[in-house]
Length: 272
Image 1: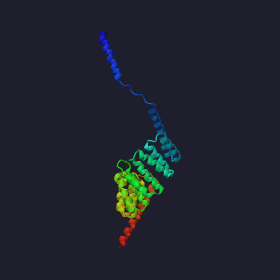
Image 2 (image 1 turned 180 degrees about the horizontal axis):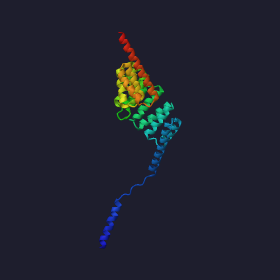
Image 3 (image 1 turned 45 degrees about the vertical axis):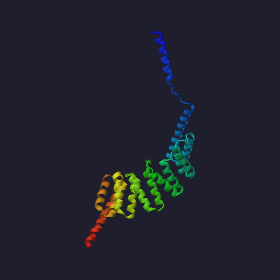
Image 4 (image 1 turned 60 degrees about the horizontal axis):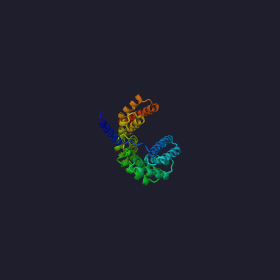
């Protein structure tokens, strides 16, 4: 090959190699930050496990280590605040939640947690404010829980109208909300609003048809309404299918009660 051509090719190769930038290696600072983050997550997981065991002292110790190692993760501060709340260190819980919100201002779980904190603290006005914020935050996936918690607070404060309206809002957001459906059914049954109670029992049993205890409650409501045939049909099914001896015994007692009531009503009609 021509010597000049070889020389020209060598210059081209050198030029191309100088244009290719080497991939920067990880700096010691970046490596150290990653190690701290991993250590923080390790202690955060230990704290979560301790919370599940209701060992709040252990949970606090581990969440505290997590935030010391990585103070920029809002979840760690939230978890620490929850552990402090359960331990009734209310001021420390408040400070931890404030740290979480400084890092993530629209943190719906922390809004809810602050509602719980102020409820436990006895500061109900502040609790209402924070539950409302959580309930009205579109990015909070569990808004229905905030409405339910707000309803419980209204009940505690004797605000019956707000209590019912807020329970209904929880169900609007989550139509299969077990606790709210059953609570409204029992509330209306206790107040004597049987048709309203029946509608909520039916909604509940439509979502949870295998709940035998609630099925028995519904049958008892039907007896109060005088809907004996419908009640007997439900009770017969319970007796035939239930594997729970207590449920079967209660169902038999209710059937006997219906039969006695029907016999008394027939006698009464005959005398008249």
